[in-house]
Image (cartoon, rainbow, N blue to C red; front, side, top):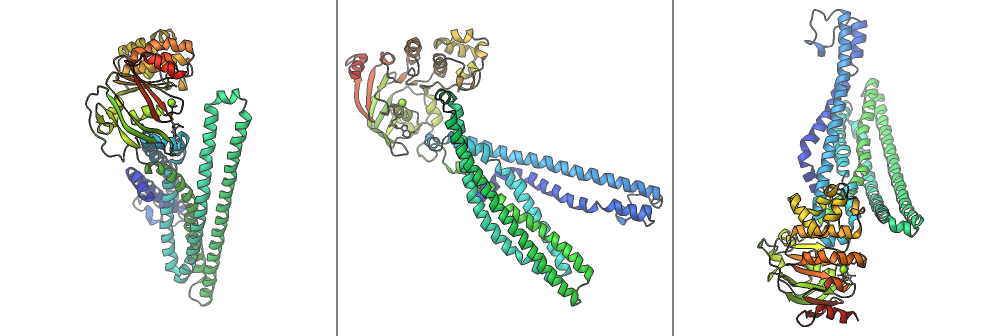
Length: 584
Ligand code: ADP
Ligand code: MG
């Protein structure tokens, strides 16, 4: 499964990987030619032997005999080889970087694509930091696996086979004896690989939890400063970082022990080969010269084996990272598994009904319990009830942020499932308690989600939300950049921008989830005007604690502990009065 996904991800980069491999292979003949100039210098410049046959035809025969000409040949070959070998290193470095970065780029893009489409329930469970860590810090392991893992492994394996062949040609039994240690190496590699993997998993978990802590502290820096808890946060961060440090050191000690084991095994293998070799010399089977040669080859035979064994724990650690990244893919994207996700894209008028709806959160918490109601298009619905009674949950079911556990939600008399999710969410404009602004210009923030909107439309929406006045008073007007989270604007101004955004979206259904509860009473009353205006002609669900906000609503839904306790229409008595009675 892991391997399959890995190979599939790398498929577009196969040609590049092969290219890196071939470029690496070029270095073998180049390094074999390196001693050539010296040999020519000694034999043909100082001495007077003919040039080696490899240069035949490249040098005109008429000059091939003069030693000055030969000197020039030496220098040309020397410089040529140097240029060639540097070009090879350069090309292979660039290609490795490009291929590695491309692999990471592709994987990150896919992960981000997938992460955005995970259900809110998955996001609740994982948390933003965990997902971000996997995309940002775990995904790059894919380039290490290929560039520093698999490719050198393949090269080493090929070198090993070549060397084995050469040794076996000279003395078969030495070759076999030299191989005896390989099973021991493989067992050691497996064992330490397993332990490295476990330790690496711990490191990764600690790492991402340290990042969570840091992110929380920095993004809540106002609270941290206000409560003087910098030292407390320091010590929490230090605690996790120290655990991580310990785990890293433990990891290194596992690897060091393993390397020691490999070195011993290789020494033992060489000793055994030497023993056999000496016997063979004594028995007259091979000459002393051949023994020296074969021992030199045995040393070279073990080099790739050392590379292979030392790569295995590294591969394990990269594998852990990649598995963490791939875990995001294992999670189904939103609504992926739900049947009846239809293609109904008909215009919606805004009749909303819930039929016997239950909703349980993933932790088993029942947030809605047998809720049924129905309102005609254009109704302004006030949702009230104590905190935690399920108001936000109810409106989240309308936009299919969550799926009801039981019962169904109807829009224009048909189940939500018969609409495509994109079309469904097009029908809603949501204004929450905390206006969400992006770090972009004011104009871009208003047109967020409707990027085709013209400047006239944007200004029109801002005027309707009474935001135009303060926007034009800013030094750069609509082009003013908003800091991260919109921190350079006041709460009321930010909320006006999200009202403008709702005006521009012009959706038939509006959800206002405590739009003014983060604001003071004076700012609230300034905003009410725009809020009432944006509700006009739409079906609206208004969650509010202050009666002002819901004064004009047509119907009052009173929730208590997830149950719909009461539903009162304005025709029965003014909603305001009802709510006031309730508040007593
Ligand atoms: P309200 O908006 O009326 O204050 P909510 O709809 O936010 O209430 O919450 C209803 C209940 O569901 C509460 O008991 C709350 O603790 C629980 N709840 C809300 N969100 C989640 C969540 N993401 N996971 C688990 N429980 C939740
Ligand atoms: Mg709420």
